[in-house]
Image 1 (cartoon, rainbow over the protein chains, first blue to last red):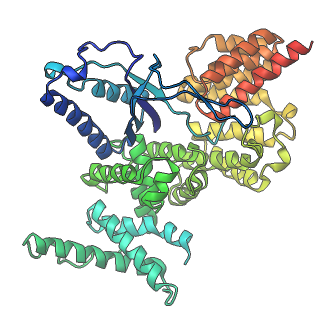
Image 2: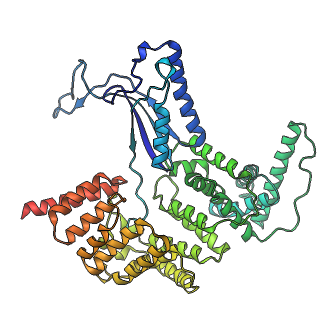
Image 3: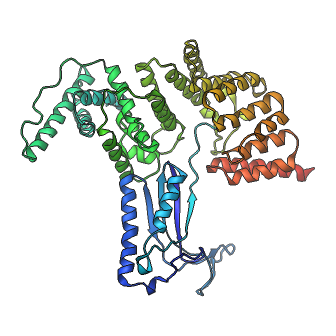
Length: 135
Length: 382
């Protein structure tokens, strides 16, 4: 009964073991990869551990307040080396160990050659609600 | 329509159906159908015996469902028998339902969900909201739990300790959604206490009442935490405290001490102090010694270190703390507090900052950050 965010990174994460860019996979390998993740999400729905999952577009913009009456500043249309999040999944599980187990399972999604990509995923706990008792 | 009455009747009606041989999931569906019918019919035509009415209607719904199911599968005469005669005392039924919903084969979150659904009579949506998960997820969790316990023989005696753990989990979940889980846990524990004379059930009920009595004083209007020593004791609910103490004393008198009674004794000593300074820390340390003996839990030892710090001074508290694993939740926060009381503000500020980063929820993080900021500005100021 603790929520965790599973983050997939486009960039910024350590390189996966099976490090072949997706555009060099075969179409079947891509299908198998997507299927794996869909199956993973469907399985978590059945176990009652699924909360949310979304994919994010690769383009992101940094935005900053630039003072009264001015439009916000953005970092422009140029490519940046920012750490981009590819997508997330939120799970609600009984323990940290279970969260790590599921993240490991998701990291085993197949890539080039049908082999697991061993992708690094970031696992972060949500802040819980305040418990009734703190003293 | 009295929703509270309906909810309080739900578990015993469900228990009657299951005892008559209905499969748990089917019985649950039938009870839900009967509740819907009650909402429709009762306002115009209230029954004299609401529970009897619900049992009759639910059993008929169950038979209808079982018959049509049987017909669909071309298996006739599956369920043609009349209800088994002679209802057993409702109290026993309810107790068995608690045991079933907290069955050891369930994960904690499943046991909690099933208990709230089957014993508490909450809707799946209400439970989902309380735990901040989608309704579909909670529905799956509950139906999975039902499947898990569907093969469990209902006449096996359960483990009361497991039931109490589940109820305490519900109580401690805090408040979110439109259902007050703490109040719900108290309601269910009261019901359990009425059905069981186990002193630990009384111990848990006393503990919940004593904690609940201080609830209003525990947070400021802006939602920030108010530590025990700074709470406005005028806002504590003295009626709840008196009730909790009474239940605890009766339980302790039976001389079968358990961890919930010991925890309730500590809560009672806090509730009993007119001011923070007058808290009987020496007795609290003694109760923590009992608790350590009963549970050998590191969290209890951590709390004991705080109590030792109050009873024998911060140095003694730090010595007790030094024996514990530093990775325990709130270990850093306790260390920060004891160092502050010992006058080592530099260490205290650093540890409060560190503790804030490890806090399990935002209210605690903000509280600890404020503590660090308070000390830092005090040091800067002079």
